[in-house]
Image (cartoon, rainbow, N blue to C red; front, side):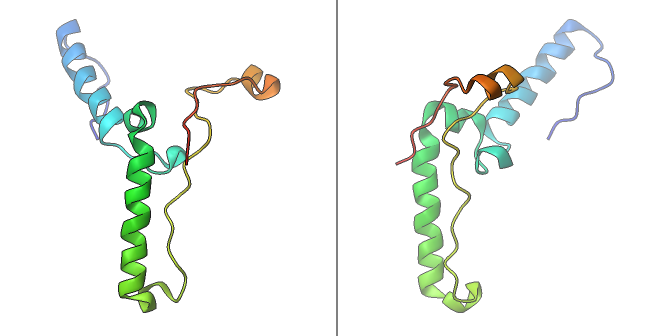
Length: 104
């Protein structure tokens, strides 16, 4: 993961860095708060398909070698029903409807 420098040499340097950083953050980095998916995947809806593939892969691994899992079927982290960016206290108290992802 690219680390933010203390300072940028110029606005152009900052733009180049931020373009690379936010591409990585949105598309490559896996976030624990959204079931080890990237924000772009959750936003565009592909997280649901990826989650289903993860389940299928873990099921196949379990069926092939259940002893590896001590007899307990593995399951990927559940996708959250709602996600926020900087969830505010007002949102918490009002229980408003933030951006959601349908999980079927």
